[in-house]
Image (cartoon, rainbow, N blue to C red):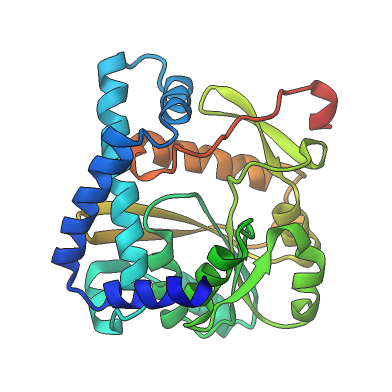
Length: 289
């Protein structure tokens, strides 16, 4: 099955982007209007985040989200044969803050949310810095699909660290210089090992691990915001949020990122992934201690 999937993706990847976007239009109609992919989840999440919007406004926002979702699908496939020049034309980001940290001999944590198109962002960033590029990812249940997505990312030299085995995955890098990318708004499996903060109008758990390691090893933390300029074109902004985390009080780094991410979502909500079940856990005061 894996080889069939890879062959199919490569056959699509050689098509020009304008034609892939026509395919995305078809997928959008099927996913949104025919299949109604996770429609209840999307609408419930939008109601949670934007209770002041009307039902019609939230439906319009959902439609924009689905269109961006299917664009993301074909854009990810295009990565298999996309040239460096084409990527640099379509994705813009000033990487000087990362280059400066590398020159100083320091490692770095890059915190970002599930904003489209993070796959293009990963490749652009990896091509523009000298750091070994580590990305935390959640393994997919289907072994064939998981292997395919690992191929997409590892093809360009990315080192994948499984989120469910961070300790072993990071062990070889403890005394080395690296750039670690963390999509920090994933729904945690164990809320007791999380910080709880208000996020989109509800108390939400966030992993303690990224902040804990940043403070323990004094690893600078950079926040990333990805914006969609127009179809097929993105811009990202990097902010050096904490240059010396060891001096920060516990919880401050995570809280700052949560506020940063929420602001970005409110400004361009249609590029964030709304079809994930974000709020599986109920807040209990003792779990925030």
